[in-house]
Length: 341
Image (cartoon, rainbow, N blue to C red; front, top):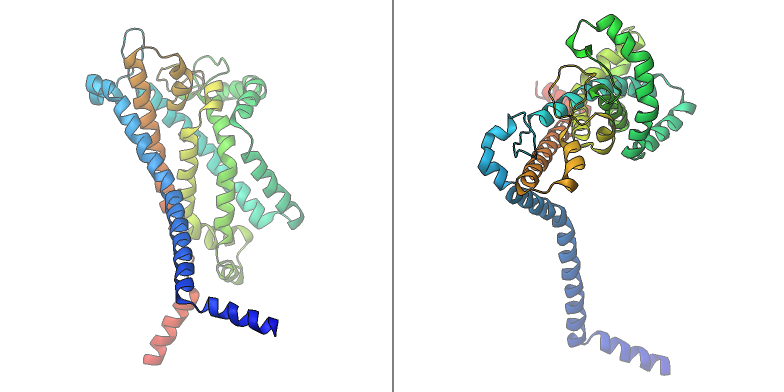
């Protein structure tokens, strides 16, 4: 009897329109708060990017007003005399990034093809895990390794070979003192390899098996199946991977600063020291005193940020533009044509 009375009172309370209105109002308030938090989280990064761009733009105005567009084409960088030009850093960034990308592209594609097409299953997964671990190694560790291991190896074996066989080219002339464009490019190539290998592996796995099966059915070899059934399908994505690696190479600072030489000169020789946009920021920002020097560094930071954003946007466009062919739609359209005829 008591239970029935309690149950009837409880149901009456639940059926009370006032109580239900309060409950709905509370739930709606919580949902609005949750929605607001989600929107705030979503717009945090774009807002920070806008504020950073605004800050860099306002801080580099003294240099822009004094040098204008000539800042990009002037090769003189002298904080003492107050003359600043970004051309040596743009050249060093372009050369080191381009060379590292050239090295990493061939190694990355070859490694990805080995892991997806040739390696046995028992070794495939451990190697992929190892590649992911390598990508997590801090850049300063790679810089120290390059100073004490890579550069002595280059001095002992690689540079003498290059001078003996390719010394007639301007790229391999001059003295080699260890820190150089070649050293910086090699260490950056090693650092961008893991991400290029990982993305390339995923692209190769996205190729429909019917492509390779059709090529094999024609009596083709394994290499021909890759050349005809895999590479044409992923060629657009490979360009995106290359641009993605380029964006990573352009923004690399610590390891490059340790091994590239940090000398604001323009030289065709890969054995000479060089300077990059990120390296000059890492080296000089803490020691800059004059307003014009600080403004010049802010303009270099703005250039570096703009180049990196544009390069990464291009990479995303190419990578996400890689879509597998939908055979169900294709055969569906063919069947519709047959039925209509």
